[in-house]
Amino acid sequence: MIDRKSEIAAARWDTQLNGTRVLYGAGALERLGELVAELGLRKVLLVSDDGVCAAGHVERARKALGAERVAWVDYDGVQPNPTSEHVEHAAQAGRDAAVDGIIALGGGSVMDCAKGANFILTQGGRMEDYWGYGKAKQPMLPSVGIPTTAGTGSEAQCFALITHPDTHAKMACGDPRARFRMVVLDPELTASAPRDVIAMTGMDAVSHAVESYVTRTRNPVAQAFAREAWQRLDAHFAGVLDGSADVTQRGSMLVGAHLAGAAIEHSMLGAAHACANPLTARFDVVHGAAVGLMLPATVRFNSAEVSALYDDLHRGSPADRRGVSLVDRVVELRSLAGLPARLRDCAITEDSLGDLADEAARQWTAGFNPRPVTETELRGLYEASF
Ligand SMILES: [Fe+2]
Image (cartoon, rainbow, N blue to C red):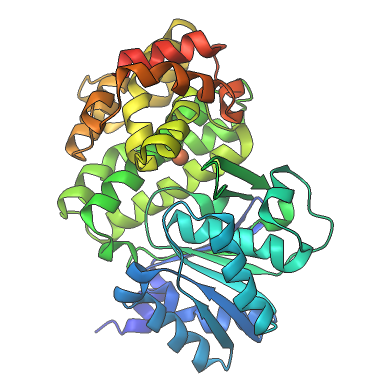
């Protein structure tokens, strides 16, 4: 009989990606204490949220830390779309306990909040001070990212997306030092995510693969990550949605989401994300639903210039072998996920499209779209999605 330890060891890999050690394996969370101790950490800030606590993951992480005599202080108050105030609270918890490292255990919001707290703990000031790229001056604390959703790929990125508490603008605060020192991909953790979270985060991962493959700053490295991500997401999104996916298939989805996140680090995103952010800021549309609303129209619009690239991304994927095009597959996945297909179904009014387009044109990601977009084209994308 295979015991638990050899089972964990069997399906495991351990590598380096963009300067981060990435460790994959079902049950890998059980090794957290040992992994953190290897980084020389003795007292860590453990960032999570209510859902992750309720699923029992935080308790398992604490047990693993305790077994290696690593002390921790909890911050489990992360909310969706964390603001600079949430970040400040998390940083305060770490400052009070004089931690020497940070662990983020949760979805994209937890990852973003933990990265943000690292900026504030080590550099001082407010999150607004780091809006943009490369504004950190001091080293940051070693950090470990452990995603519990197959979605944002935030654990693969050096950007913290923090919401401005007054304007609700998404502040992208990036610095190579904010990158997680280690990422633990444990497919046992994603089993507990509620279906609506699986749907939203999976759609986000899909949009990352599709957008990062074709951006103006695309390159072979980003495209290799995005292509591998798309193949995995296309193959397993349906299974994780209906619960039929086993741990290996859930793991493939988790790796796909991670690689899509890594692709963004190399080539950024495009108009679907530029249009999605104002929908979240103004109408509270959850990010995954917002990109799902905008992605098909964006792909159709971009196809005038990069249809060969979309074909290349999609070639040989399970849907392609069935004769379903990339854009039709995106629509199909959105429908399987039960996500909205039209802006009008999300309480968005037609008279707001002009203001939305004005905001979308000011999003950083708009400048990376392969086909140039101004307010006029972005309004066209909203109208096509209305
Ligand atoms: Fe996204």
